[in-house]
Length: 415
Figure 1 (tube, rainbow, N blue to C red):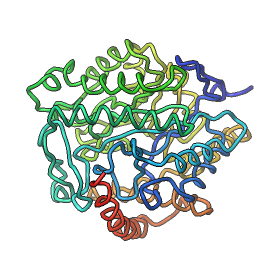
Figure 2 (figure 1 turned 60 degrees about the vertical axis):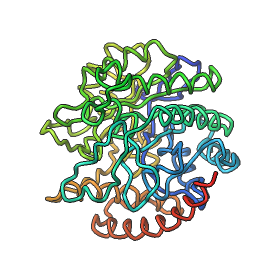
Figure 3 (figure 1 turned 120 degrees about the horizontal axis):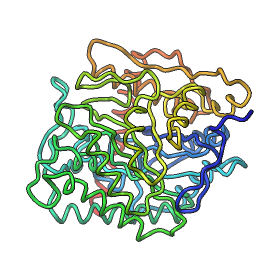
Figure 4 (figure 1 turned 135 degrees about the vertical axis):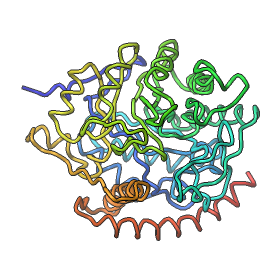
C-alpha cells in the first residue's frame, strides 16, 4: 500500500505538488561572487531534486542587498542578472518527478549581524536581546513610511524576477523573527501608526506584500507564506494572533501557508523555546498547526523535526496537507525515495545541547550548513561531524565571506 505522503496535492492556483513532502527553507549561505547562485548551490539542489521531495523551497533570498541574514546569502532584486537564477531553477528540477520549486523571499529586519554593516531595519528601534551575545547584532532603526513602501515594492519586484527565472512560486518569509515577523509581534512592533498596535494593524504589512506580489505574477504562479505558530516568547505573537493572520489570508490568493515558530531569541525551529514551553520531539509545531488549520481555507504545511515516515504520516492524518522537512534532508537528501523502499528509515538529528543556549543554536546551524556545503562540493553528508569543529570552521568561513560581502555592498550602494 502506497503511503499517503506520496499522494499529489492540487493547489488553489492550479499547480500540483507530486507528493506531500517539502524541503523547507534552510539558510545556505552559499552564494557565489555577486551574491548570486553558483555551481555549489546548483549541485546542492540537484541532490535534492533527485531525492524525491515534491516541493523544494529555497533558502531565504534577500530582496535588498543592503540587509542580509548572512554574508553568503543570495540577493534577487530588479537589477539582478537573470541567468544565474534560471540555472538554479533548472538544477532544482533535475528529475522527471514534476518537482515544484519555489523561492523564499525575505528581509532580515533587525536580525543582521553587526559585522555585516548595511541597513538594519525594524518596525521599532527594539534591539535583539541575547544577553552577552547581543552586541553581535546591529542596532535597528524604526522604518519610515517610505521605507515600508519601498520594501513592499522590493518583494513584488523579486517575485516577478523569480517567475521570469523559471521558479514555480515564491514563499514570503514572515516567520522566525525576520522583518515581517517583527511587524507581527507586539514585542518588536511598538508603532503608533496604522502598522502598529492591534493585530489587525500589525498584519497590514504582510497583507500589502501579498497583494503586491500577487499583482505582479501570473495567476498560476504559486504564492505562499511562512508564519510563526507562535514566537515562544512571553508576550509575543501567539496562536490566537496566527489565527487572525490566517483568516485575513483566506481572503487573498494564497496557495499554501507554512507554520513554524521561534526567532533568534527563541530558536523553537530547533526545538528550544525561551518561554519554557515544551515542544514535541518530532513535528514540533503539529499541535499548534492542528488548531490554527481549523480556520484556514488554503492548504497548511508544518515544519520542524520530522525525520521518520510514521511521523510524516501522522502529520497528514491530523489534517495538515504538506509535511516540511529541513534538517532531515540536510542529513539525507534522498530520504523520500528511501522511504518508498524502507519505511523505517530515519534521518539523524544533530541538535547541540551546550550550557550556553545561544552558542548551542549557532553550533546546530553550523552543523547543518556544513552538510549543505559538503553536498555542494559533491560529497555526502557527514551526520557525525563535530559541532565544535563545525562552529569554528563556520566562523572562519563567515569572516571571509563578510570581507567579500563588504566589497559587494560598496558597489550595491551605488545602484
